[in-house]
Length: 156
Image 1: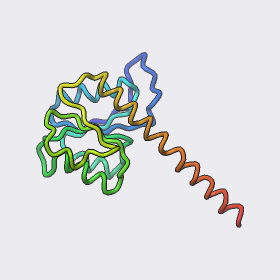
Image 2 (image 1 turned 90 degrees about the vertical axis):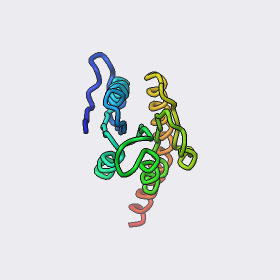
Image 3 (image 1 turned 135 degrees about the vertical axis):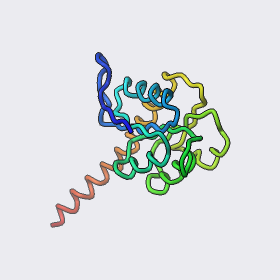
């Protein structure tokens, strides 16, 4: 497990409040993916398999998950997404894999697929887009929660 929020020198840390969980068993791919997302200004948590990812997820849910499908451990990337969906149905997930089989059951509005080999620009753009959509979706819920709180205080 590796956690870092430091963007390379000269890169604005504009999105440091967003945390991305990268789940990839191939070390070099995980490093490249994590560094690219970190370079885009996001905080990154790394897991080498879905079991480790679930432990990290339970401790502190990220804002987005990028995961491979085929990994060692008791569950794979498809299983990881299925477990996450039980408690966080709208959490953005990007599946980055060369294996498409088994993904149809988990592909929904919040789950996206990018085929390996992919360009880092493609993944970074997808991460930024999904986090922006997720943020916009949260604004009405936050506004409604604030209004409810304000109404409750006025009644007291």
